[in-house]
Image (cartoon, rainbow, N blue to C red; front, side, top):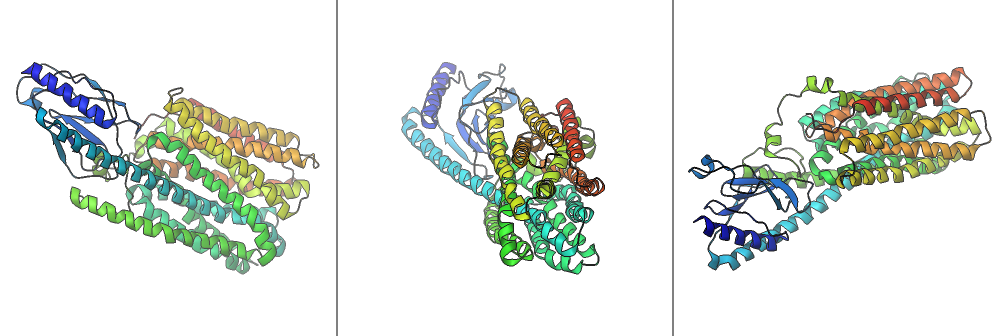
Length: 568
């Protein structure tokens, strides 16, 4: 009977290939069993079964991906079997389904008389899956848009102090050391919830954790003017409010990392993260662009009131979206016999093993002893020092070094941050292209991107230091600052995406760890910058040289130990 079934198998493969848009598949000899499409509970990957052999359709999400067929054994067929009687590699279409589905079988019989019916049924099923794929595409784009919007709001609220601190210091008589303390107090709270927020976003719904953070930081952004008025004699209330605002923002990016890891396909994940990071930079641009006009028309307190209200607007869209997604997830989980999570979007990569392992112990020992983790930490900490310098002190630099007015200083900052948005997105597309086309490995790509993001800014900072006593070369300073920040944007495709490579489950926690340590370094550098400027009469050369040195050291460590192999 084997030759008969070989012919039938070839017929099925030809029909399947015509229906699914694939090349004809030569199955060879196949056991005498019906073939079926299986949908595994808790998984978004379709599984094609031939004679009890399941073929997981993995890959980068496109069609025609090579997949491995496990060997058949005597246990599979209930009778002796001479090894693997089918070829070990097939090419099947890979489909990302919208949600975990219940176990369903669509039997494909081997009766030649029903071939037309089989083809019609499989075509109908394929069309249904295509519709679901298109729906997933819209859901993913909507999710990326919403997460980018919250990164924008996060940055707008944070950058408000960088601009308003100039008129505030004039009103309250603050010197450089006080301005450094006010700016760094935000990062004191921010570093606490980065690590803790990463844990919460791993153990609970990251959508819920993110929403709670937005609510907290928006409330205390609105409360900042009141706290500043109450701190005319003592800075305590203002420092506390800024720290609590940092606590709220600290959970944002660990939650975003988990959301992206679960919901965005791997082949577009780097460019998606780069786009989200560019939303943060756009928020800085919007703050620098609009704050001077708002202050001139309504006073500096209105900046905090208007920017703080953006968080509530975002929540008004996010909560209904999360609720609708939660209802869809509840229905699927009831069908699969699993408890429903709170505020959970559909996942494109989640498997049944991921769901069952959700309560497994966190591998703290492996994380702490991983050289790749500490390579990310080194790069992120040193880049964070430079980012904190640009974020908190750039308007002050233009004002003190070149004597420009505060509103003009804000507008000068638009050019560097605007170019950085473009550079960050280009880095994501370049990195995905290098990996997807097989030109570089993922580890090599990360190292190349991070080298550009660290060595480039270091050279720019050294150039600024050598020209720091020239107070007439404003245009040259703007060019160097622009190059510094734009090249630094390539870190989005370097360490900024490396957490996703090391762990499927703990990427948010890893990001929280590295970002929390980077926040400590950034907070210390912001405060130290104020002390240095106060002690050396606003001489910026030493500050730029120190920042350049940190960039170089961090990149050398990253190049030595960084890896993109999954470890946890």
